[in-house]
Amino acid sequence: MLLSSLLALPAAVLAQTYTEHLHLSPLAHTSHLLAAFNFTSTTPLPAYESGHFTHFPRSLAQILQHTRTRELHLRFAWGRWDDEQWGPRPRDGRREGGTGVEIWAWLDSDDGGGVEERWSGLVNGLSGLFCASLNFIDSTRTTRPVLSFDPEGTHGDDNDVRGLELLHGTLPHEVVCTENLTPFLKLLPCKGKAGTMSIDVRPICPGGSGGGGECVLEIQQTVDVVLDVERSMRARGDPIPRPRPIEELECDQMKQYNGGDTCYPKVKEGEMGWSLSRIFGTPVRGNCHLADGHADADITLEVPSDRIVNVTNAQPLDLGSDHGVRSYRLPNHPPGQYTDLALPQQQLTARPITNAQPPLYATRTITGSGQQHGGMHARLRNPHPYPQVITYFESLPWFLRPYIHTLRVRDSETHEDVKLEKMFYTPAKDRERGTHLELMFTVPAKGEVELSYDFEKAVLRYTEYPPDANRGFDVAPAVIRVLPRTNDTSAARNEPASPWAEDRKQGSYIRTTSLLLPLPTPDFSMPYNVIILTSTVIALGFGSIFNLLTRRFVWAEEVPVGKLALRVKGLVGVVQGVVGRLKGTKAVGLGGGNGGGVGGGKG
Image (cartoon, rainbow, N blue to C red; front, side, top):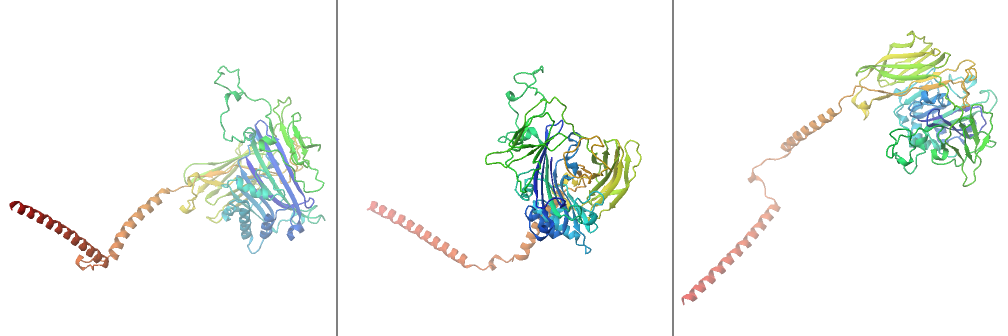
């Protein structure tokens, strides 16, 4: 799974700071490892407004200033998070995005209607900066959510956002690749090496805008990637997966069919061994401590207490952690020394750490068959013994037309309708805007809620189909926000504390998988056949008519003889005369010789 985000916002932290952090967590009951990178830098708002940048990337700042963007959240994601096996999402899903590209931002409102134009300038500028197709986020892929997103930064007194407008766009078909990571790394002050990305930019003021502290602009760049340990440690010189030689396999000799040419692989027991240098292909080559007095941990490792960890060139820190997290600080490496963490294969005596329950399980599918109608069906299951208030947000393309009168939200067990506390709906306009559907309701404790509605499929113009039309059209994932409970703490719920030290006032976010919508697709071979046949007929007819209209028909005797023809004719006559004379001379010579011979004989 590949996930990245970008955040720019104001924050209550010291000005001109930069921190790096890597959190490693083996996922329970699997051979996967979660590697979560975080890069945070801040700059004073006066310096940002005057164009003086130290750690904040100038290329991004110029785009934000030109479009008057106050807070930005950008997500690149590839793959999906497996809630059933891996548990809760990193950072409670706040730095997660839907498959492809997702972006939302708060822009200064403009009575003149220039917000859409500046939003277009923002996505086009970010498209060029990150080598992505963000420029395809037009009015048909843009919505204005009301309930699902709150600003994370400080915006005026009491965080008043009435002078700002929130716009949200998605591009579920975008593929995240290396060309998107390269610009992401260039935004870092030290130009480090990382995985996938998430960017968040926000303004932060200590104690609010009137608290007397210096306001700063904070940018958080996060990278969350789930790695297959065995595949990641595969030999770098032989990346093609091949069957291992039988002598290198650990065979279960208790099987009856075990033999010299037959092997049943033995199941490995205990925790799999791994190291940073083997997974990432290189050890940690240094740090980037730009701020003085930096004492936070650079690497945190979440493993059981009796797990053996071999540390090379790293200083352990005792931060009073009580949830199985070990912290390390990287020293200033002299040339030739690197940091590495190695965990050997080990059979643990104590029970390994189990993943906590996620706040909610969510699935979403398209139902029905045929080329005209279909249905949407979502299941939301609450695994906790207390009810949860959630918001459900969908941004649908204009060619998917939902029938709101068929919308039903009901309890799966009692089949009774669930009361909708709030609902926001903006219908689509063909080729102008998509559908915006936002609901707020409560999922009962240990219960399951089903959401369903019918929709109609629109017929597109043949020029609106992509090259791979038969694959289907991507529908953006649904965004589910689990609102925080009043006085809600992990201790009150008897759950283990989370290693993510972030404010939970935003609640938790869950995104479903993207969907493929099949639309009526014409037979694109017929236009080509018609074009070829028509072109052939036109070529034959035009050629014949053109010859008839442009050629001049006369008798052969009326055709004037050209100079070249006369010369050729004269040359032919000369040749014929020479040949005739040669033939005549030869005939005369033969006749005179015969006469003399006969006469001599007679005499």
